Length: 299
Picture 1 (spheres, helix red, strand yellow):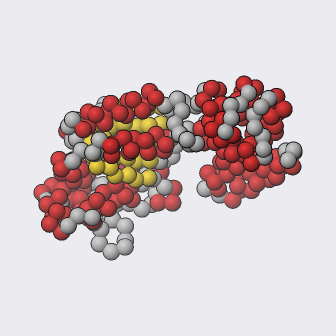
Picture 2 (tube, rainbow, N blue to C red):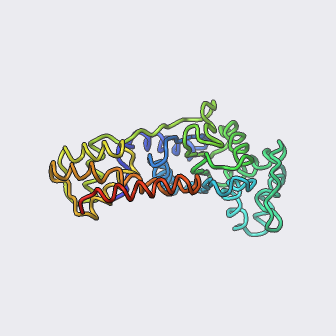
Picture 3 (tube, helix red, strand yellow):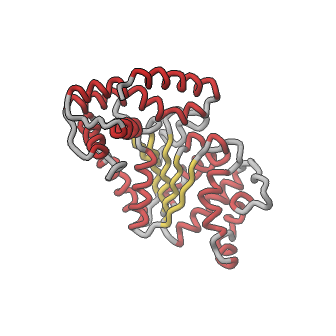
């Protein structure tokens, strides 16, 4: 299957073991770190599938640069759909006691964002809301792109991670190391298991490219693809797509030479969307470079 996981057996094993512990009543937190395109999202999606197969309730959220100023945006993605999907009676029971302090966050009135105040009372209420849900059924709470989470949600994630051992839930977070504004969330916390994703090897790169081309590729070709992408899975897939579109199959040295010409162009296209978020200047620079590179590629 194109887009499948390669060389992630160890990481999948760690998450599978943690899910077993959660299903048995333990509480854990895991942070998956790595640069853009390294496969964090794919690993988190696999964890979701595994958790559903073990009858855990699964909720997910994703940080976004466009929503950084939206207080509690990530927390609301995680919890609001679950609460709003309950009957009125079940909702009242779930938001009873200390969990009632979470109601203004997960069920805000009107269209205005909830207050950004991350006081102890609000954090305490959100914790007890998660604990109440977990008492009904073990939980998997997945947050991708945590480095783009709003500050109020970051406070709660850190608060929950420090108390997760008392709740049958897995808090699973994906983030870029050191990325602003919330890079480093959970790293080094005493109850957190850290997973750092590494680039793919030359062998795995060859396997990914072969999936796209439908046939094995020469060693020299795999070496060229690995050199052009640094083993980054996203860039490998984008490069392989570009090669296939141009009828370059990876049979030998001539195809490897084509990778040397095409590689920078394909990689630049893959990161263009990310650079666009930085403003028009960087995007214009990439467009100019793409035109120069494209003119040098033999059709």
